[in-house]
Length: 78
Image (cartoon, rainbow, N blue to C red):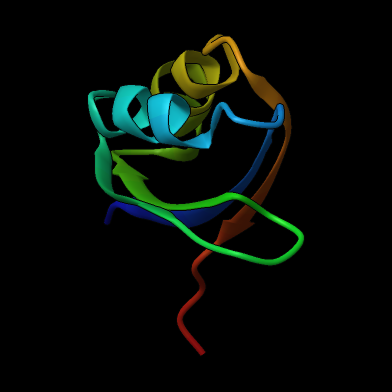
């Protein structure tokens, strides 16, 4: 079973387009889209396990310059 999550991203002013492009290149990212509102980008990502998700996807995204905050929302099956 894969771990899937939405990652809400805030960026520095004027950085959203470049940050979105760089996030889209991260392994495990399925969709990265610019949005309006309190967050600048919404990302849909997945990995084989929660540990893999943290090590590969989250770590890679949080290292991208221009990001000021992220909020990760794991998908759950109800």
